Length: 180
Image 1 (cartoon, rainbow, N blue to C red):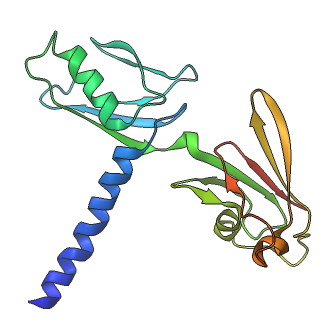
Image 2: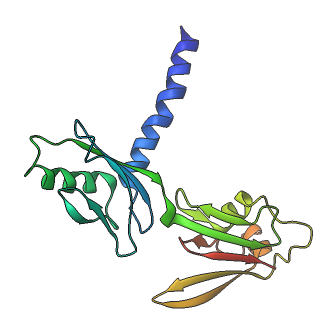
């Protein structure tokens, strides 16, 4: 009986955490969303958030999606569809959080594009990229970040972070991390 209980907890806890993450996730440009309207298959679809932050839905037209959580967007859609459909119920699911990408280049074991699935710092992204290869210059890492339309360079001294002598820098969507 205990094994069954632990098995159920092992299944349910990740589902609950996923629902909590979904409720606090802020939709961004280029995210792929699955919008399902119960009983209305012709209104259900996958949509990509455009660069202007909007999505297009039949009957609802263009809706602002960027900057909202999935439950907020769900409420907006249901409110508009209520003019056309009796008691509409919909679900908004983030299929691919494309707006939360960072890029790691240079002397890491697995350079490439990574999705920030929660607040992450430079040490976590380096770990996700497989760590440094043998030629990495960990004293001169650079984060390229766009702020207010301008690209800024943030120098990172990884050994100082590890020793606790420097702050572990937060990584933002769109950052490019270069390990020379």
